[in-house]
Length: 154
Image (tube, rainbow, N blue to C red; front, side, top):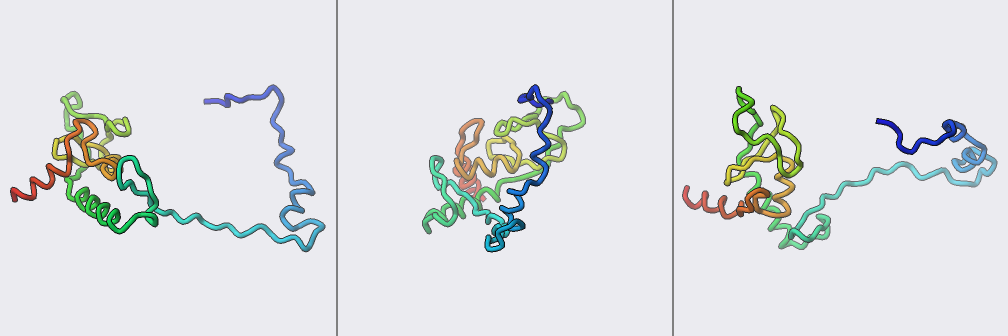
């Protein structure tokens, strides 16, 4: 891999050297009344949820009903079976080898989640998918109906 934006001249290392204007901008220069830059503040990560597939909102912007619906959805997702990907002894056997959400090959030991329709996905991929849409990305089978019917039979 190379730099696709190469210039015909050599690199300008003068940008690395501190100039007088740089020192002045940080309060080290001639103006003693100038304030130092504000201290570094970490950005607080606020989770983003999808009340419906077409909506995206911060957790602080959700209504109480949406929060309850999302909590129920998280609970249903946690009840789906999970496991670890193991291709088996024979690599040639007809087995799913790719997560259709991220399109990456499964690697031995990857955490996976099984849907009631028997499709498998990376756990992080399908959990995020199911927070947006409660259908299987491969066959479009509703996941919640299958889960609820399995609770009724037990």
